[in-house]
Image 1 (tube, rainbow, N blue to C red):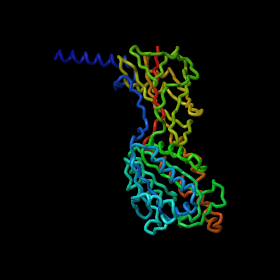
Image 2 (image 1 turned 45 degrees about the vertical axis):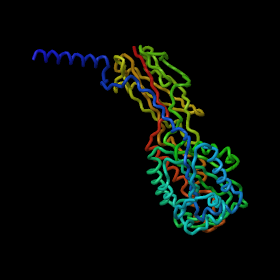
Image 3 (image 1 turned 135 degrees about the vertical axis):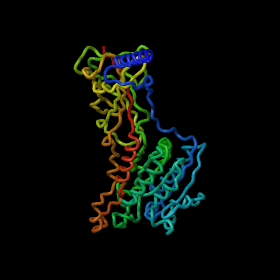
Image 4 (image 1 turned 60 degrees about the horizontal axis):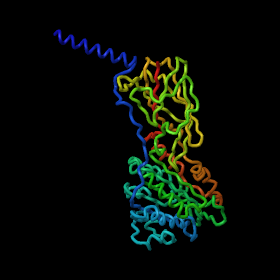
Length: 448
């Protein structure tokens, strides 16, 4: 009994000693030294690939091929050349036509027909555009290309979004949209709730009023980017009215750190090489000694944010920070929630690809003297993400449909119904699922 009481006293004394060293408000949840920054890179470019190319064979597409040298016809030729140049030593290609159903194009003669009018006059294919069937048929291990006018009613859009989410987004894959305006001479079907058809000809119109078509690219970000850049070299760069966007699970090539950063201003802090005897250094870490006991100490820094090319627009002023605080004790870090009030990051601003902010310290909230660590993750808020301006410009104003019914000659076929609705929903789903990071940073502060 005496031995047991002695052991209990020893254990209690040890516990009190640990809590005293850790500082008030800290609890013993060991963080193994300090986590190394996890660079969230896009999956690497495929060394060999299978590409599945689906041609929309509905009759509404026929207007693009009535001009033998239309941008649509030229783009089909560019894609074929680019698939060869992008993966010259390891690529396979399969071609399909779809509409009411899907059919394999088994030889080159059938593929070439996609540039000719009879391809779009088959009644077994040309009355519906069932892109959702293509998504069901697609293989996520491959690069899937779907060429279509993307003209969808609300029900079609909702179903397409659901299918893309289930098949591709949930598997961390990207969605590329290549938007091109082309010569057109035909009918545009399915306008508005009533599905009205309008005749549209670009013969006397300027290129900005040409009719859009789209290549939807489904697969890994790097594969989509690589194909697009090969298309640019193979003739796409000569097409005037085009835009390109990739909606991806991540927004930056790698998470930003302090590497290459600029310390713009500092107050009541002295930057150190190390504040810990065994040293914790790296591009993700900045270390400071707190001078005296000021009301507020701070440093202002600018980071290089390496945003993925062709990705969405970011409002850098709408960034949120998530900070976890630690106390350094006996060569290890323990979570210290009571120190969290002493550190904050705010005042985000942008200059080009540079993200600037202020990190502020309020020493009165330090629970004790010692070394504290603040791990901060920066993420864009939901309202920070926006589609590029061209999406709004190319989106059809459906409020004008009654006017077009009264005067069919005023119909604007240079826009696409539900384009903004479709892409904005994809963007919001991706943000909700992935909540992407922009940076992961560590700040060591020695007090006393």
